[in-house]
Length: 203
Image (cartoon, rainbow, N blue to C red):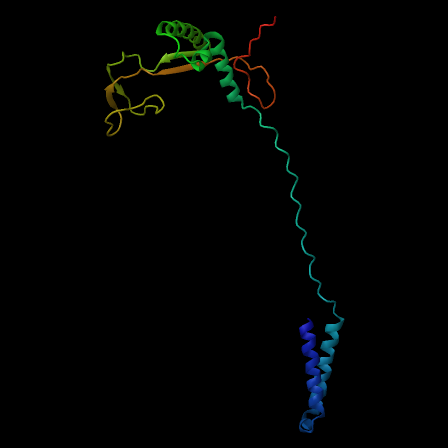
């Protein structure tokens, strides 16, 4: 708008200058009308309110982010630790695996392994329904059917083409149809349950 007003004033000055020049005598009536029209336009421009710039947009404040809670022990992790605790309680599995068995002779290791075997087997039988995937004897020839579940078979050797496959059963595999783990006792927030408590004999 300011530029238009400045141009209008300059045109008025030019017209007025031309009006007083002798060479413009035949056009003086028209120049007077032009001066009047330009004056009216400039007056209208002055009277019109200046176009205000829109106020700058205020940056929107980011919504307050909730402070993330302290990472709690995942339920699956807690169940795994609790299962290790049962194997430790019944079969001393953690003691056996974490101990250095090199100083012991084979007879001592064998005796300890029997305790671990019996205890851990009782835990598995109590909380799982475990059975072999294949009932054939290991070493026999078996057929892997079309559409077999990938997690139920591990194919080794020379594999070509599509199922069915024929091969020697190296391992029967294991599967469970039932899992009944006990309910977990609540532990401290963000902390996994203890596998085995420290035992202290107070004297």
